[in-house]
Length: 132
Image (cartoon, rainbow, N blue to C red):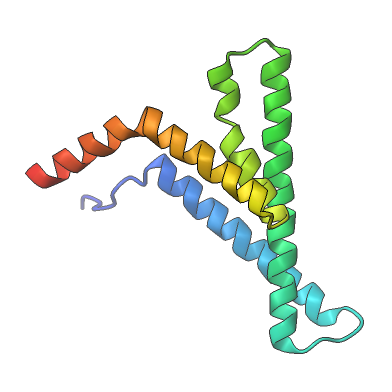
């Protein structure tokens, strides 16, 4: 018999693995928050666990993006290779500490990125979905 399984795209695999990692870390943080001293109620423990998870994953993303920018800069990489890491850096910093300045910088970089590089792709993909 032939298998009817469709291949899962790489982007979907990456998204699913990041979601699974987030849930796994969140579950561990919930267990830590419930079992740590002083004892906190269940709803507050979940809130604390979510905050810890966002801080941890935001710190990891910001650190990896910052180190990546340093490596690209040290190897005399192009500006285009460095600016690609600006979005993950700002997103990680925003998860690490909710600051309006970082949010504005993230929004500005994302808007310029979409305007400069993504506008044609958005129009092209919208055109293909209408004709289908």
